[in-house]
Amino acid sequence: MIDLGPATLGVTRLLDAVGDDRLDGPTPCPDYTVRDILAHLEGLAVAFRDAAGKDLGPTTDTDPGTGRPPLTEDWRTALPRRLDELAAAWRAPEAWEGTTRAGGVTLPGEVAGLVALNEVLIHGWDLARATGQGYAPDEASLEVSYAFLAPGADDPAERGPFGPPVPVAAGAPLLDRVIGLSGRRPDWRPGVAA
Figure 1: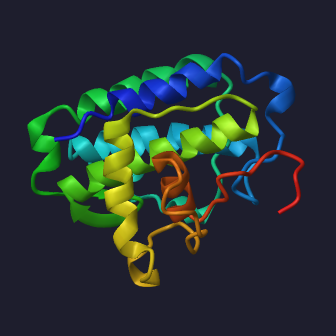
Figure 2: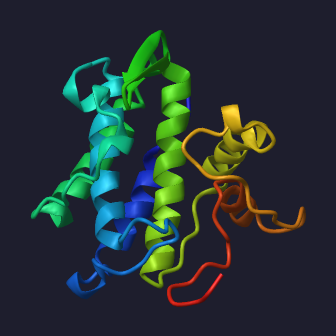
């Protein structure tokens, strides 16, 4: 089992510095604003919390590609709570067993847990970069995310929702290598041309 708590806490720590004036700003995901990333984090926290508890239904059946949910008005209090609930749900050994569903896809519990960790970690980086904040995920989460993403680097069928990997030097920090595997440029900054 992997503890999602350090990754969810890392995202929660970013939220206080996200002013309302930044919500419409760009992110490393070209089609997403900061508002969209926050709404996506809210939605995935609920979906993967429910996936961990095998509480299958609308939250686990909705394909995230079908549209962007609106950011809730109470996101500043709701998102930290939902991230805490997500981490707590994946601390149960049975969450990692059997099959579950997330994003309308049926998958083994252990894979769903890895997807949840990876989503939180990568979108946490998106949020940090978009809002000019530092981001230092724990080494264990980074190692798990790297091992999860690396096999899909050369096989689009295994890549999941991310774009083609961005080449990153082998000696680069592990966070940069993970971000590159997710199809993002580790040097991305708002307002800097590619």
